[in-house]
Image (cartoon, rainbow, N blue to C red; front, side, top):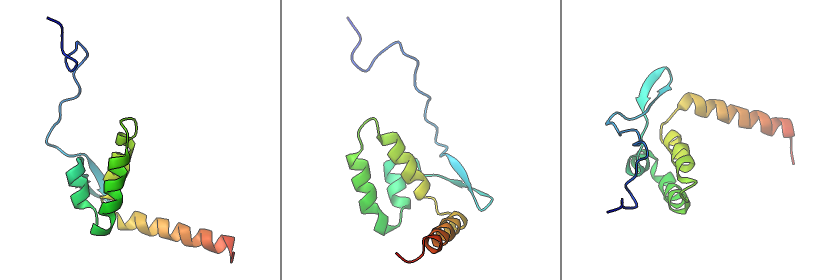
Length: 98
């Protein structure tokens, strides 16, 4: 009998561990949510609808990039947010009145 569509001789994917990925925020190592429910729970309430739309609209070739984007957005980083806000203000001043 042949192998079913989900069985192959291909190498197995990396086994999942219970350890979430981590990143540094303000010099402190923090966990990064790495599942759809965990990312959604970590987001501010006002961002969850947009997250749901992005996840639901993502095709198989886009889902990894969409999840990576939202994983990082779900981890608050006040220092990075301030840098981005300052850069946006500088750019607005550089462009001057429209």
